[in-house]
Amino acid sequence: MRSVFLPFAPPTISQEEITEVIDTLSSDWITTGPKVKKFEEMFAQYIGSETALALNSCTAGLHLALIALGIGPGDEVITTPMTFCSTVNVIEQVGAHPVLVDVQPDTLNISPELIEKAVTEKTKCILPVHYAGHPCEMDTIKEIARTKNLYIVEDAAHAFSARYKGQKVGTIGDLTAFSFYVTKNITTAEGGMLTGNPEFIEKARIYSLHGMSKDAWKRYDKGSSWYYEVVYPGFKYNMTDIHASIGLRQLQKIETFQSRRREIAHKYDEAFSEYPYFEIPCRLPNIEHAWHLYVLRLNLETLRIDRDQFIEELKERKIGTSVHFIPIHLHPYYRKKYGYKPEDYPVAYFNFKRIISLPIYPRMSDQDIADVIEAVVDVAEKYKR
Ligand SMILES: Cc1ncc(COP(=O)(O)O)c(C=O)c1O
Image 1: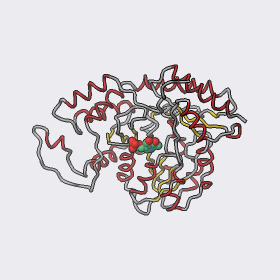
Image 2 (image 1 turned 180 degrees about the vertical axis):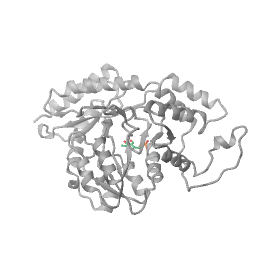
Image 3 (image 1 turned 30 degrees about the vertical axis):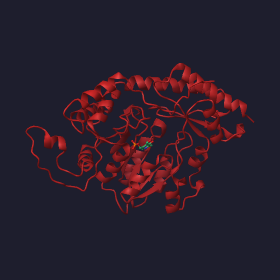
Image 4 (image 1 turned 30 degrees about the horizontal axis):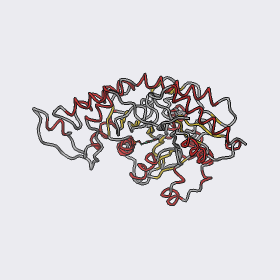
């Protein structure tokens, strides 16, 4: 057994990020400025998006996306229960009505057939989440959006560098939000990026900084004017140059990071597919998985313990794990407001009880991977039926 606890998802930060942050801190400009601009340009270039807007979170990106598209009271937004709370919180925040539809049993991504059935005259937008980094069925979702005249805002918090039929996530729907939270495929500690239609991005950009017609860097730079006007009642969602410094260096390593994530997923697949206790993550043809999460599903009928006890056993074996996600309809706010019952979304609910997210990150050593496999198999063998 391991002597040292293996954390679930620590960042992979090296000297380059530290040097870049020091460079920024030693300069005359530490908030939104030249490094953010460079990060946006590099990110847009990598994704193949015309433009990109750096923000202080993915949540900010999703919120601004809905605002830029003019979604508000009286509108319905169709999304998934199998997501982080902020995907749905932002729909509530703009005063719209979130309409949850269940997920597909294989990918745990939103079901296009159920989206189609849920569309009403009030529907304005579909908000798919690329769960764990596996892209949703975007062709079908796009077709529904086209025929029903709906917007698509993608939650790509997990899906940086994922591809759908050869196309990078971030270039498919009207707007796409990415996360650089500390556990994500690249990090800025906290941060996010919005890509997509330049007209909406520009509107979101103004909203991201108080709704001012000119940002501070443009006001304080030499040769600029102090004058600005408020054209929208905006927010304070901008990224700082300190955070962008980390992002710039992380972005340069994305291919190496992804290749290690793929390697780890492959090793887990090979090890766990031998046993009846587990269901390994599905991947459909024609996609490139971002492997933000490796979600192992327990076949609970083969075990004498439940998922929570399984996690405790792994903790005792010094393996950190997590659960993605507690489905939205189980949270008190949503349960009370909309009267949801657990069985209203049977696929999400059934799978919630059997999922465990295992450690998967670039700086895991081969020994770390072997330790995770050994611990998971050991718990299952000890408690098999
Ligand atoms: C699916 C999903 N959407 C949105 C978010 C929010 O990201 P952020 O913390 O950057 O706001 C997360 C964060 O974990 C997430 O998992």
